[in-house]
Amino acid sequence: MAALVAGIFGHPRPTPSPSPTPPPPANPAVTMVARRQFVAWQAGHINRADYAPALSARTDDAKVEQSSLQLGALGALQSTQYLGPLNIYDTPADVTVYLYKMLCSNGFVFEQLALDGRGKIEGIVFRDTIPTPGPSASP
Image 1 (tube, helix red, strand yellow):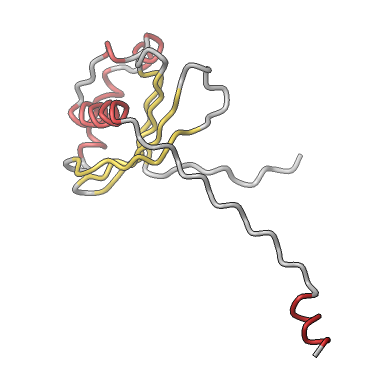
Image 2: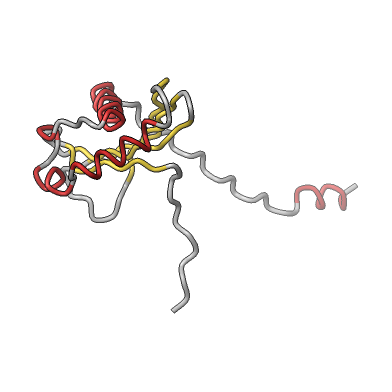
């Protein structure tokens, strides 16, 4: 019987992986900004006063129109799913980046929204996939 006990209890158990930390709850005001921006981009009519000057200058009407066609094909916005904040390298200290999944009648898109401390939009990106880091290349 001693051998059986040693066989069962003689090997250390691996340390369990820590549970992932759930994202902080969504801020309703930020979620409202994300929804309004998505609908504005779908319609092709953004309010440049909502944007930081540098982003507004880089966002020309042709880009808005092209994005409107692509986002419009997704159909009506049905719901918004908050996925959490993102830590993006080199983001200024007063900027927070949020990730949402915008669920529409004909599909979905991810919206990455960066807001500064004044509530101005520092960045907005719509993607059909979430980029994940790949294996690093050998030198």
